[in-house]
Length: 116
Image (cartoon, rainbow, N blue to C red; front, side, top):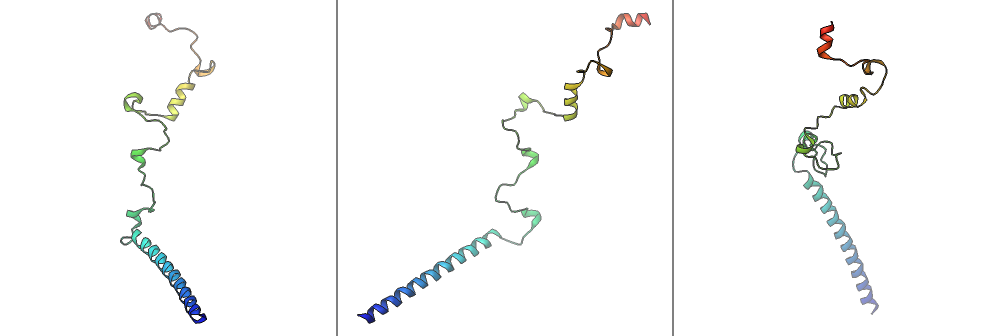
């Protein structure tokens, strides 16, 4: 009985070692196949880019993606935003002294020409 038990123990140990070796080889083969599948041909950094997993962005058609709501060209117009000019329109004429102050008298285009 001890002889059969020893044979079974050796058989079980060899099966465990074989199963572990098979699993390791399968995992390595799968990883190698996955790595080779990602590179189909010669690498070209100009055509491939950075090989990002996400879709490539097109800043000209998508914009900066900072706008939360949808824009409508019919409601919003062309949206020509000028940071310098638009800011100056809100500030111009606010001070009451200096070059932005209102004129001291009202101008009358009909009578002012006659008095000159």
